[in-house]
Structure formats: C-alpha cells, structure tokens
Image 1 (cartoon, rainbow, N blue to C red):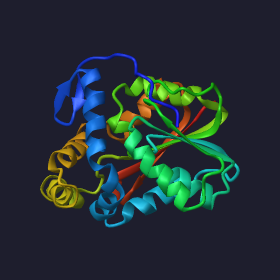
Image 2: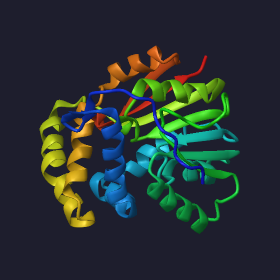
Image 3: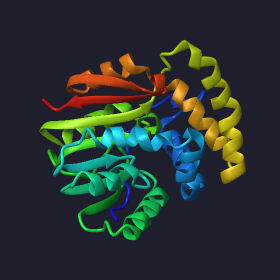
Image 4: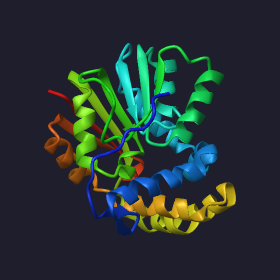
Length: 252
C-alpha cells in the first residue's frame, strides 16, 4: 500500500461548525475516521437505513463497464469493489487519507476474492501520487466534504482523468422537499450522534459528520466549483429528496 503524501497548505476552513487551520483540519478528520473505521460500514447502514447502498449503486450504474477507475476517499471499498464486481471494471485504485480505513477495505477485497486489479493508496485528495490521465473515471462518495483543500482536490481529480473521462461525486446535500427538512434536522442532530455513541463509543465524530453536511455547498454551489475546476457538462441528480446529490462532470 502506498504511503500518504502531504496536502498543500491553506488556512481557516470549516471543521463542522468551527473553523480551523488546514493542517489541523486534516489531522482532525483523520482522527474522526481512525476512531470509527472498524464500525464505519455498520454505522452507514444504521444511519441511512441501508439507503447508502442504493445511493452508491446509482453511482456505480453510471460507470461504463471496462472502465479504469480511481475512487478517492474510497476507504472501505464500497464503490470500487462494487464496481469491480458488478460492472466488469478493468482496474480500480482506492485512495484515502486514512490508512486504517484502507486496511478495512483491503481485508474486504481479500474476503471477496477481488485482489487482482485493485490498488490501495494512502494519500490526500489534494495531492494524489498518481500519473496524469491515468483513469477513465474518478469517483468520490461522501468524502468531498471532508477534504481540507477542495479546489486543489477537484483539480487533482481532473488531472488524473483521461480526456473524455467521467467524474462522479456522491455527497450529502440540501433537502429540496420542505416536508423533510424539520424531520431530517431532528434526526441528524439528535439521533445520529447518539447512534455514534452507542455503536462506536464516539458521539463527537458523528456530531462532526452531521455538522460537515450543513457546512458543505449546496447542489448549485458545488456545480459551480466543478466548472471552476475545469470540468464540463456538469449536472446533478437529487436522490431521496435532495438528502443526497449525485454530481456528474466530464474532462472535456
């Protein structure tokens, strides 16, 4: 497994509802996922009622069979391993800044017999140790809001895409159905942190994750960031009333 690289510097960025220096942010985010790595997938099932699997499958279904994939913030391998199993992927590189998450993903790949063609790289999204134009597709699922330097990370993900390559981002977004808003806020701020405490023994990490969703750009703002990073044919589809959005863009 390739060892981590350091991201470029930037100051004063959100970590949940407070603002911290970029070097502190990266360490704090790593600490969150160090704490929950072993039960991360179980918590995803509990928090979403299993919906996260359907959201990720919607992303996987957008990928062409035979694609060479880079999955950034791929952690435990849900997207990349699902792609290799269901879409006849040529190869997949799973990148994550947290080596503990990657170890869980590597164990899962071995359990499923999906070792050939799968590479694990511990690196920051804003400093990918990968060649230019390496992949036909780049994905990031529920990881972009944890990136310390989002513009640099988007530029890096475009750099490693081949011309005509497809970028897909699955991320929590802004609810577009008013009837869901109050219930979603109640669930997010009252139930999710308690689930985190009961299941992982770490309430604070899940309180951060909820806050990070509220600090993340909405659908249109993220589309603008993708265009500013040089992507073309930018679009998005709201899933589950906008709780999640699937963003699509291309290196043109």
